[in-house]
Length: 267
Image 1 (cartoon, rainbow, N blue to C red):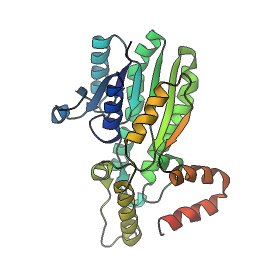
Image 2 (image 1 turned 90 degrees about the vertical axis):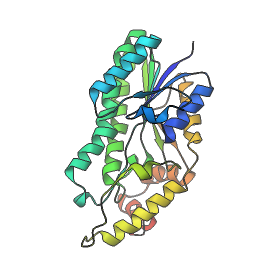
Image 3 (image 1 turned 45 degrees about the vertical axis):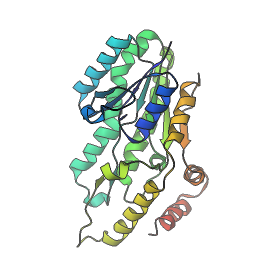
Image 4 (image 1 turned 120 degrees about the vertical axis):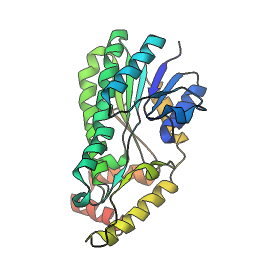
């Protein structure tokens, strides 16, 4: 029996790559977008869903279950970037980012769990970020939202153990997608004390995304996880140095690691 997979944010970038890869492997794939009419040529169905609106989450998941009678894999991929000096980012934008990157996945999980518990099986994959393992300058809000999802998954795994429902995190590094175009950028203010360091860091971040890895790497990693009967708690996917940066954080004194980050970002 082909597994039924739901991918939030499956219309572009990493989500699209995962969806196309799984579709080719014979999975029944559903992606989501706030504007599904823009993706009528997708290789798999794109349904209307906004992770910030609980009613759309419940409606879409109910629609899939009604049609397929099951839901085997949920991939919480929908997310939003945000950059800027924390002092200058409006509170509304910070809350908006957490609504997408943290509360959205929680509500998707809540909507999927009753069906997975009913069928006594299921897998939930939360796409986080290597940035969630460390507080990055001018990406602090993004790091915090993704780090929160990492910790939530650790707790959720233990709570779901009795129901044969698995959950894991997959933390990508920089991939060549359109995330930079869609993220919220706090404006570079002429009179800001952060103008030069923030401007320089912003250019560096955008260059990292432009020169990032092929998102097919994420698709292959997710495929292997789905076929693993006992997935790990955490996975990291990306260039060696990006993954190794997490190891360094564990073994180096805090101030030494902080200096390495500041040197990397030329601060």
